[in-house]
Image 1 (cartoon, rainbow, N blue to C red):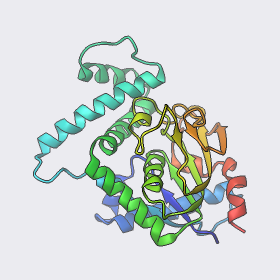
Image 2 (cartoon, rainbow, N blue to C red; image 1 turned 180 degrees about the horizontal axis):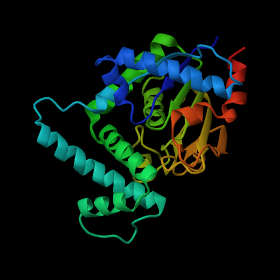
Image 3 (cartoon, helix red, strand yellow; image 1 turned 90 degrees about the vertical axis):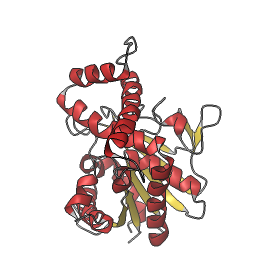
Length: 273
């Protein structure tokens, strides 16, 4: 069977803790779940679809060398508040709100419904740390590159923040060819949060498919508040297929819902023969 590497999204640090502080154990536990989720998309077929999950969440949690816990908390809070503000603007909230970031973000979280507030509390800190701390960013990209290099997959499936890490990793490592990059619930096109901060930086307002990727398919749920905008073609050259799906108004961003979506079948089936 074709090797598939998965790249996880936000909120996966619990796997690391449950594995006793082992990134390998976290990746193994996640792989078993992702195999089951993807099997649902492929007609309930039980199989080992993923050769490995590239695990990086632990790199977004530890403090910088020599940094105290209060210093780390203050730095993370400032970056997180800025991401929340810009994310809210992408949602159409807060355009006319002024004042301190802290006051605004507290107001924002109070206005959101439970599912959106819970998502924001996971999304903003991890995205902020990845995009503003270059050392952490490099460690995350190295973890993904090492996983792809070990497995040499034809397919990379990247969910959520993982699509950002995978995109940058593939650009940074042209020696890693991939036949299909499948992005799920991707925030790659999110203005003032992700898009302008990508490496390599967009040129004239356009990003581009990594040169070593033969085909790029992007799938997003219409209600996914991480995938804003859900379509990436307006921002990136080389997106071969865009699919807007309707997964679940509650579980609008989970890997389980995306990997179990029937829309994946026609794109993956040619690689599973």
